[in-house]
Amino acid sequence: MESNKKRILILEGDSRQCLPFIRTLRQEGHHVTIVCPWRCCPGFFSRYPNKRLIWPDIYHDEEGFRKALFNYIKKEKTDIVLTLGDGAAILIAKHREEILKYVKTHVPNYEILRYGADKSLVMDFCMKNNIPCPLTYSDKKESLDKISSKLPFPVLVKPVRGTGAVGIHRFETKEQLLQHYETLKAKYGDLIIQENIPLGKTQFQAEAFCDANSKMKVCMVIGKPRFFPVEGGTSTCNITINRPDIVELVRKLLEGIGWIGPADVDLLLDPRDNTPKILEINPRVTAGIKIGFEAGINYADLHLKLALGEEIPFIKEYKLGVILRNLCLDMLWYKYSSGDARKNTNPPFWQFFGKNVKYQTLRIDDPLPFIGFILSNLIKYRKPGVWDSKLGTDLTDN
Image 1: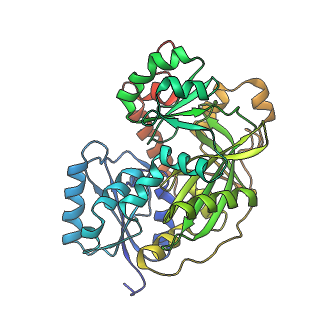
Image 2: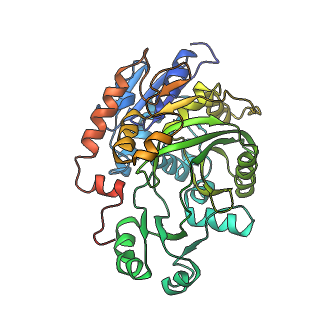
Image 3: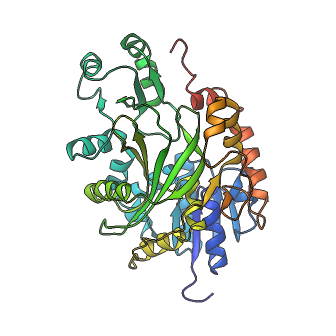
């Protein structure tokens, strides 16, 4: 293998976001090994990995996963370890110095990663630095009674750490909040209580990338016209757009907290003052990252450069109007949406084809990951409570 071709280990290869990384890295001549907790998942079904490994699920057996990782990097020739999800990133960050004895990685130190993953810390930074965001409070600093007096109802309660819409609940009254708060805290851990911003026409996300000196070098802005649950959750359809104002907000946030590496920043346009407001940082690569590859940004190369200590280039231009759909979730959006929403959505729901229309898990040259995605979700949502957590119906009387 040529010296500039690397042996790369990709953790959490069961995710949708791994697919464009696997394909791009393999096509560039690198040797790609992916790690999955089971065979029924998108990455395992892809044609592009050179090698597939089954390790314990990090979210259920972190110690088993850690032992498998160290056993592998000590025995097998590996140049770079990449992780595209929360769990493995946190584990690598915790053991970063020991891991660096054997391989290179793009994951920053634990304190940086922990800060970005904590919604309470991020919102507190925004409020202190005049970065638009919803008013947000934590019961660690103030009582629920005092917080309730500062926020108009309805309010949102969110886990401090979490993914998608899982664990997010809206409460119409103070009585409902007090009734269910401790139950949610016992289930999801630390919580934040947040101002409810009226849902406007679209949400946004910014797929950013900062270098080792915390300078933001890339920021692609995406419109999210549809999401599921329909009141606000995981995006089902994305489109690349040009919003310099959002780029500047994201730069101020990420450089201000000293971020390193990839970050997905979620924002919502507040229809009351027409201002985009930051909701959270997802300190990982998200499932929608494929839209960046389709828009001309090689995020895989950025990860490699960061891991190898190479200069990260400024990338300011990307193709606008690229549409990325999660077909399964988009169908759920259609099922649960009102007639007006179905008629007025843009891009149209029925726009299934076109040179700019792409799909998260489906490609003509690699069709099987779509089947893996279907199977993995059938397994996932058969587990008790998972569907209710996604829809926010895991409480009664709320």
